[in-house]
Every structure is written in C-alpha cells, then in structure tokens.
Figure 1: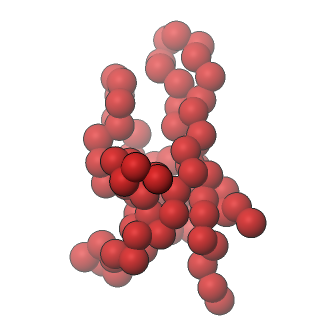
Figure 2 (figure 1 turned 90 degrees about the horizontal axis):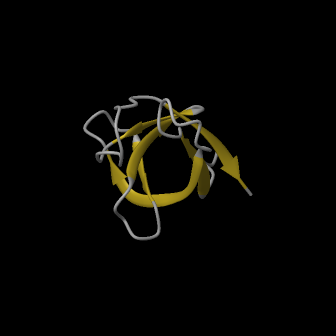
Length: 77
C-alpha cells in the first residue's frame, strides 16, 4: 500500500492559554529513521516528524513550552 504524500500534523496550543491548535502540513523527505520509519518535514524543512499510523513523533524541538512526543496526523489527498 502506498503512503500518503502529505499529512496534516496537529500541534497543541500553549497549555493554560486556551490557544487554538496549529496545523502543519508535512511531506516525505525520502529519509528513514534508524528504525526504518519514514521522515516527513514541513515546506521549510525545520519541522521534522516520523509518522507511524495516525501518530507523528517529532524529530525536531517544538516551539513553546511542553514537549509532546506523540502528535495526531491525518493523511491528505
């Protein structure tokens, strides 16, 4: 089965601030993690994630406080 070429990754808003979540669209980089998981990045290449199923694991530090190790992703057409 082919993997989607784009995913929407949802980043939570700042805890305690009731800010809206941010959605970032990522594309495949052609790279794999050491475990063989595909790496995706935003258009600028500064936000990188490994995607498995419906979850993304950040490979770069996220802006703002808190460190989320599992982010929700949705495949895009």
